[in-house]
Length: 225
Image 1: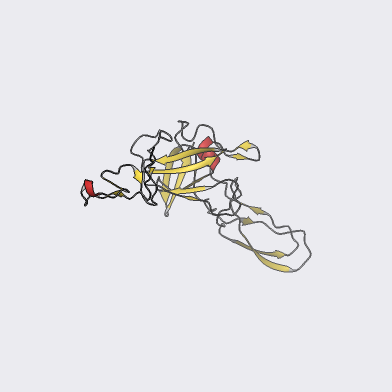
Image 2 (image 1 turned 90 degrees about the horizontal axis):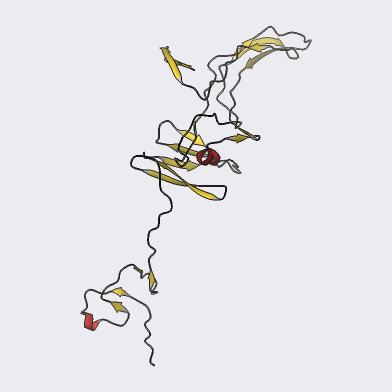
């Protein structure tokens, strides 16, 4: 039995009469890759996952966690970027376009938990209720800086040289990230004195329901419950 050998498939050649086509040309070429002379079908689309958020999905991001892939999605034009720190074990994600700039870990986005030192730091009752509405949890990006300078009490107990000092303080979150410093407080005392500091701002709540707000001097004071 004779064999028919065709090499270097060239695909559709519409300008040549079908009877005059060379052996490696075709009248019809559908769903084939013809970039390297090999006859190979194109892959058909396949459903990877069904997105569960309502509305028209405008952004999607694949996040790996625990050996599985999760698809973060938004009904808004959202931009996502991985955290830049080298050796970032939390897999930080930063995203904009869904409100204020936001940040989450891969764990928060997929599990709605924020485990720090063996304990879940994410407040119960907050985040996405539907288990497949990724990202399920996030924080507003950034830390507020303290508004008030510390109060320096009377330095005492030392016997050294007189010095002038300035004190500031910052707020630090559970991830160890630090805010901008407070306004400075200035004082004079001995370099080996005990310098008592009071009047430090209390760190604001990271959750709560807004029950009131007042505006004065360009600042909004929010009351939460």
